[in-house]
Amino acid sequence: MSTPLLSLYRKFTRWPAGHWLFSRAICFKAPYFGTIAPRIVSLEPNRCEVRIADRRRVHNHIGTVHAIALCNLAELAAGVMTDATLPASMRWIPKGMTVEYLKKATGAMHGVATPEVPVVESTSGYELPVTVIVKNDAGEAVFRASIAMWVSPRK
Image 1 (cartoon, rainbow, N blue to C red):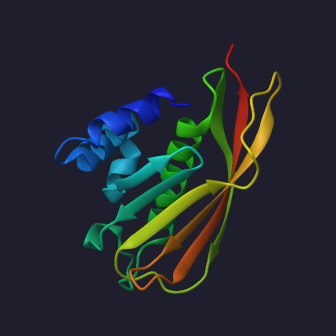
Image 2 (cartoon, rainbow, N blue to C red; image 1 turned 90 degrees about the vertical axis):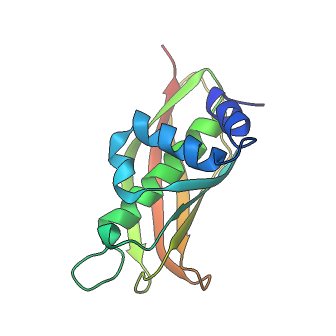
């Protein structure tokens, strides 16, 4: 199975700087994500990995990665993963997010989004919970999000 987004990712990432180009295309489509300058480093059905560099623009007043930058990273990873996983007859929209700040977020951040339940084709809408774990360069979990995606048939 390959969704249009997943096909585009596979096409772009065959080229030099393809991950960068694909990430920029995502930010062009959804401009707010550009505020964290994300890099989508891996995408496959049921899994998306996104990195953000340690830049001043994502810091808060105490020099750690801002809580909203972490939420932005989580929503991006969950959305791209969901889009790359859903059957063509289905669509999605984020419905809510619950977050946990596990420790100070310093340095580059690496988030991985996975669905908590199998993604299925359906004739009615359902809630798809997606977990995103964000780790620092030492591999320590610093943030966890559960994002409720509302999945429904396309009209």
